[in-house]
Length: 265
Image (cartoon, rainbow, N blue to C red; front, side, top):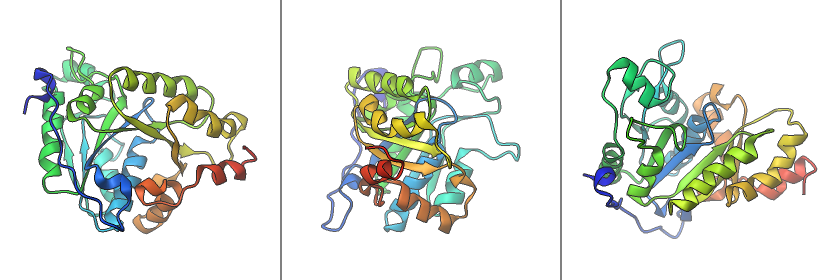
């Protein structure tokens, strides 16, 4: 598999949607990127995986690079398994320091991971799974190595869509627009944006961003997951995921009704 270095796209398997299937899942690989670090990518990834698993689909989650660990020594895929249940997970590389992967690799001497390796793993998993989610590290253009390889290269090589995870409040519009513009310029499909941590008491900026984020992202608001969702157990998290994600993912989220609840729209 030489997707990154050869410039050739590798094609993941696509499946036919059944009459009762959510239309979105006729794509077998989705890339989850964020507008930065700490925006809720892992929670969004877990929520999509939980809903897909609950509908009977076999799900795999690939973590492109784990940089830094929780105080108890766990990583993002531990969170995914705890929240989403029975999913296959693959961590491509682990660095102990919470840094950009390229920087962490230089400092640790641990080999870097390439877009070709990540894409190849996703394609292999797509042969035996209905849905493969690839979660990035930090934002879209965070470097995996000193050649400048990024998650954008993975998405381009695979020819698969990207979901943007964004913050709710002030400052998110610029970061979201920049991420969407990079995807557009590189010919990568951006299908929409999800707020990874919706505050319990949203301020004016967050409420207004319910209307403005889709404009910045160049795609619909596909969900908003409440802050603190990562602390729930699996059953509670599944209900939160259902309420907080679009029907495209098997959820019940309605962006217009959500905005109206905050007197927006």
